[in-house]
Structures are given as C-alpha cells and as structure tokens.
Amino acid sequence: GIMRTEEMVDNQSPLVDNASPLAPDASPLAPNPSNPTDDTRPLAQFTDEIRTLIQGSRSGEAIKLCRHVLRYYPKHVATLRQMAEAALEEGDLAGAQELLQRVLSADPESVIAYAGLAIIHDQQRRADEAIWHLECAYDLAPANLEIRKELLRLYAARDGQAPSRLKLTPCGL
Image 1 (cartoon, rainbow, N blue to C red):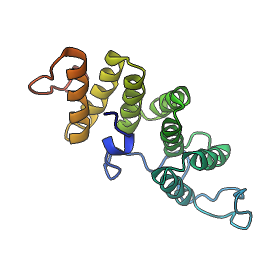
Image 2: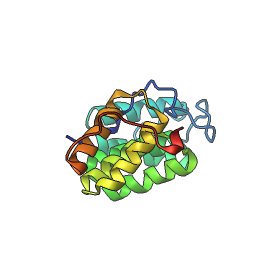
Image 3: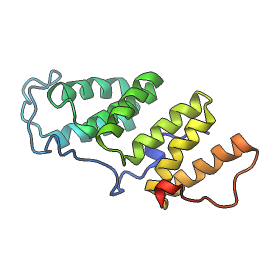
C-alpha cells in the first residue's frame, strides 16, 4: 500500500532538515492568531506543534499553522515540508507537489521531499515518475529499509517482479 512520508523516512535521520539556515530556531514569530498572548514562541516550538497536529490527523489545523509561520518566514524549509505533508494527508496532491518542489529547490537532498513526490506520482498512477523520485530518495538514504521496501514494491507493480537487489543510480555513486 501507499506509505506516508513519515513512515518512509525516519525523522531522526541526519538528512532530515529540521532547521533551516534561512530562519534560525531561536527567532520569535509575530503573535499567534489562535493564542494572542503568546507572541514569543521560538520557531522550533511551532515546528513541533505542526508535527504533533499532523501525527494526530489534524492536517487542516497544521496547514493553518504552517501558513502563519510562512507569513513571517516564507522560505523556512521545514515548514514548507510539513505543509506539504499535511496537504498530502488532506488529499491535495497538486498543492503538496508544488510545496515539495519548493523544498527541493531549497534543499536538493531532501529525502522526505523525494519520498513525498514518489507517493504523489504513485497515487496518480505514474509509475515511472514515482520510481524516479524514490530512486533519488534511495540514492540519498540507501540504508533506509522503508524506502528500499517501497521501491521494490513499485518495481514489482510496474515490471511484474522486483529486482533481486537494488543498485544505486549513477547519481548515487
């Protein structure tokens, strides 16, 4: 079946871009519209809250909070990635795809963005595109078992059988 990006990519991986050089975690945001008395929360706290909302299947609320953060930090990669994940959970494939492409333009080694794009293309029944994006994720994180398993599943669905072993693409070598 189709996996969620958080299942496919370990959030503790050093490749996960939890902080962005564009917006330091210690920076306070403008007032939070849902809590007007709390206007000095650090960006990392918002990122944690968004993650909790997504994990709690409250993607709509997560998107609202992402929009709030992006109003002040429009290039904050972690928030763009989280908003894409929430959009994907909401079924907004086009919105998620656009956000993930923005993540890749800022961080071309984002395993999560490649895995998310693979999920989108798989849901749209575009096997070659799904495989290409997942191969990119695999090249960046060849030890990730969930990515390997999903890539083998995509190969089997497209070709009738999975290869006996996965090889890195020329880009991954």
